[in-house]
Amino acid sequence: MKYWPFALGGAGLVLVLLLVFGLMWGQRALAPADPAGESVLFEVSPGESLGSIALRLEREGVVRNARAVVWLARWQELAGSLQTGEFRLSPADTPDQILARISEGRVETYEVSLPEGFTLGQIAERLDAAGLVDAAEFTRVARDPETAARLGVEGDTLEGYLFPETYRLPKGMTAEEVAEVLVEQLLVIWREIEPKAKAIDFSMKETVTLASIIEKETGAAKERPIIASVFHNRLRRGMRLETDPTVIYGIPDFDGNLKRRHLEDETNSYNTYRIFGLPPGPIASPGADALRAVVDPAETDYLYFVSKNDGTHVFSSRYTDHEDAVDRYQRRRSR
Figure 1 (cartoon, rainbow, N blue to C red):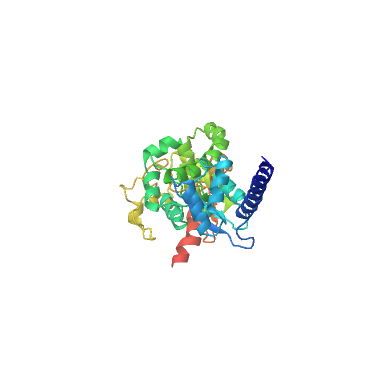
Figure 2: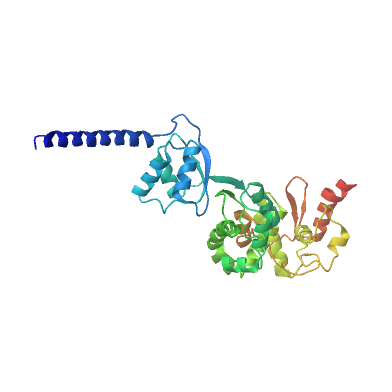
């Protein structure tokens, strides 16, 4: 019996030592792997296990010890909450901070700028170039009538409804998800202008279609309401719109040279030199200013305009004045 106190004291000492060493190990294992290290891109794949993620984090030098990361994730009940995607992780962060970033889905995003006046095809190519989505797959989705119906736009495709803006998007999104982000930005503007559109008896499709034409006709913001007034005036009078961008849109593989035969082509459903009213749908993605110009045009009696070749136009109410402007700025220039 006299040895029990010594045995108990020895066991207690061992437990204390184990606790101390455990705390020291944990403190080291859960410390930043490299306070001066550079961040790395780390991708978590769908269905990847916690153990696999932890091992790769250790191999890439993001954390010190994979087992410690597994223990920490389970202790914090994060094992089933780790998100997929591409993350920018720093070895200067603690495993706790790294797990928080992954579990909260703070994925790396990439900037892509979609200019006003881009067509669906051009947008698909720009998204592909940014590494965000395959151009062919995005085009297929965006031209699917079911996609347009699901996203709540009036049309058979998303042409014109992919809002031009600078976006920051993560990799790994599906074509449908990317399309939804772009369309939602258009719908934000539509909800703003919808009351005015209804006041002039314009539907969403008519508004976006006319806005797309205005967008292609001028890059000068101050001219958009004036050009909108020209088209509204012509529509009210039952005149053809006679706008080149619509014709060009309807020409497959247009080579940049608009010819008279193109303007006389009866088979081109977008040829506004032959059809009355608006073309079948948008010809590009209009920006917010062009959309607002449709529902809030300038008050003019203009029926014509011609380019001055400097990005602006001359506007006329009478055809004779328009002919003089064409002669001055186009015919003489081409001689």
